[in-house]
Image (cartoon, rainbow, N blue to C red; front, side, top):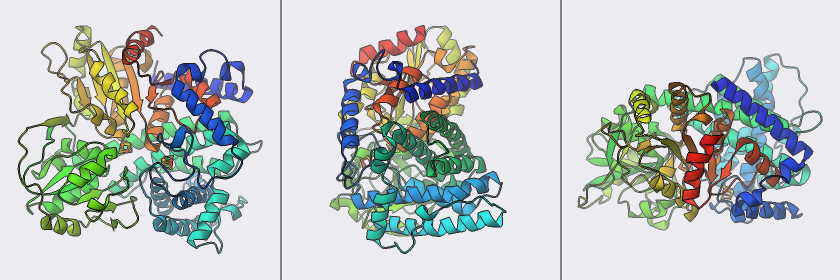
Length: 619
Ligand code: SF4
Ligand code: SF4
């Protein structure tokens, strides 16, 4: 099946899904494998979800946008992430205001007269509301005030461009309500997801959040691109503005599950362009990555640690620390930076320190130098390193020093004043990264030959986010239990569960490694391109006909965007976990399971492997 045919099949599945949800037919909610039969954790979530929606009194806050949400249903008193009700309300208000701005912004895009200023603001504001990005209420008060000015600006531009549509924006305006308390109040009144669930029901409200979180994820990836190139892509921004506009005001007849599901897949489609654009920006600024062994043990000397996803910050830091006797270490999603020639040409890009984001309280506490957090995922800094941590870009925590631009002189001075590592590590350890899609496609001939020779019997994509839950060991156990005649593609910080294990090479003398780290979570794009290339190389009709399985570890909204992209491409039978999204209602969840083959992960690893390697090939 061509990718166009895959997309068409996917859309057919969507129509069936939408009809099933709309009719609440036995097929949708009762027959076949129920959610409870599929996974007990899903059933628990379904019960928690119903209980949450049955509560009639508005809680202090309501957020269920990430995987770790409280009780599997929603954070209602304080976020598991540390987000306060105050910040949650301000974030809800900001997202609501962005929908208002998009009433005009989508029209400006349709008229071919977008505003670069508005588009950049929309991306930064959306990104700031993602999980583990910004916890600073003062920054959100500033964002909300700027959004109010941006709404007026957008309307003026629209009228100036000749726009005549009558649009009531009174519910998006702040008026005199600009104090912190007043804004918090407005957020509870106008932006509350809880209230929307009461009004529209959990199926429709949940689908609206699915679209919103997909938009947030795509916007965050596109903001990385903006950070690098200073530009946005008009087609991508048009898709984001149109999606937000649709959520701003219901169409005649109200929202339907079908329209919202179709929109979710359109966001997945737009996110494919987002990831392609970001890859191109990385290639043009940092060169084509190639496999690189990276030291994971520290060396004696002064040091700076840099985390998050913004490689352009890493580049600036490397340039500013050149010749200063300071080693730069990467943390979390910065690891793939070591594969790019324009970054690894700096000899003081020393190594990678620590693991995924959830370990930062330990990793940052033990690192003897300053730390820069360029993007998500940030957790509450401990006192022991609060004076040594800096935020950049959209990231924020109250009381933590924020760098408004890429002048790292203060960080460098602090690094010079701190002791750094006092000795070299006695053990030599390393991980390998830098397998961009070009490196993998360059080996496509050898891969096909080895498949024909039986040295590769299966491909796995095991990756995505990481998180604190023990259930995420599933992804490690799966990677370790995979047969030696298999290749594991990975991307995102989920790989830290298993990337320090030496999985060796496939049988034979090709030297093809069994684990291929393709980069950050946005580099999942590379895995998609590789999958499509394998489909062509093997003459398969669809990616689903390949001996290829997806096990996706999701945590927050960037992962939602990647998941929507995979669904848009018609990829089926994705194993997803540790728990399925709380914002997807039980009815919608069952339809996703039945129409897209989404599978909640299961602790029976051998059963999972059997399902991936045998059952799926019979389809
Ligand atoms: S982002 Fe996640 S952990 Fe934080 S409040 Fe929302 S659902 Fe809870
Ligand atoms: S991959 Fe996901 S969980 Fe990991 S740092 Fe990036 S956004 Fe956070």
